[in-house]
Length: 77
Image (cartoon, rainbow, N blue to C red; front, side, top):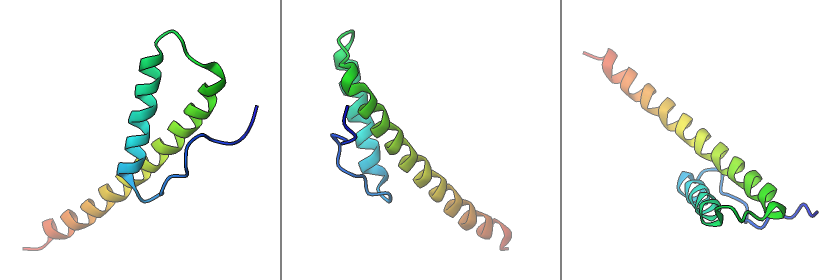
């Protein structure tokens, strides 16, 4: 088994790129139905987890920024 991922590295600041990767992997798994390639499953899961983490971090950053903006606005008369 090799360590080389079939996926290029993600831009850690790109929610859209990470989300597209999640959609692509999900589509690949759905299309496989009961014919999963178990040799390719681990790299797909690893790539999906990495993409999920980028999405999670970007959503947290946006949420924090919105909270800061809305919190500042809500406190001003």
